[in-house]
Length: 261
Image 1: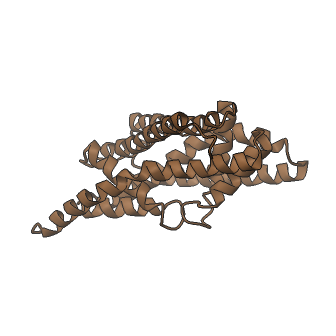
Image 2 (image 1 turned 60 degrees about the horizontal axis):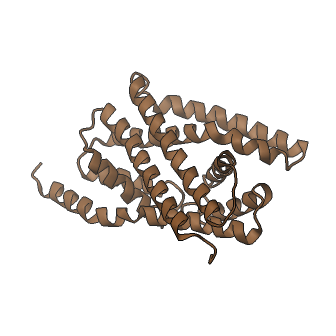
Image 3 (image 1 turned 120 degrees about the vertical axis):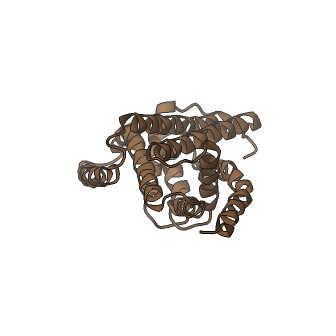
């Protein structure tokens, strides 16, 4: 930890903060295109509040529940908000799936043929299920190609800056790992944390990232663990604005409740 460059760490915080703004933009595009009259600032507030809440809620989608609750209490249409959150999650998965080969190729080089065939079969099944869920959830946006394109571009921006943040952390401990390898390894870690076995992937993300960085990134186990812990710290730090936005959202919710039907 003493080797970590403060300059690179702060740059990583900025990069991850930008990625959070891209994530908020993605959801805002989906809401607006579905007819929800919501300001961009309120979309940011709800998104950051969800990010903050996910730090202590079960699974990686606990923050989505908070976003939904806040949006409903603020008077936005429940059905559209639910559909937009599902679409938001699926578009994020679709974006990550584009980067999945960057991680699978080096990982397959570690295992034997049996493990590779099993992994490939599981991936095919997941892809089929993903396609079915996507089609069912995109009924509103299938007729809005510009909204889908904009939300996908926001997803790619979100991903690019997440990868950049981790890349900067590695530079901060004097390790140069290819940006594209970082993208692949983080993408694999992301899919591993989707298994609902912990709070926001806590522990699962760190263990898988440590393993991948050690096996494929050329880092020692202590260096890999340091980067994994700093990555978690980055996500916590960049979610803190949600704690500041929470009183404003609660105030708006109370104001909404006090209005006559």
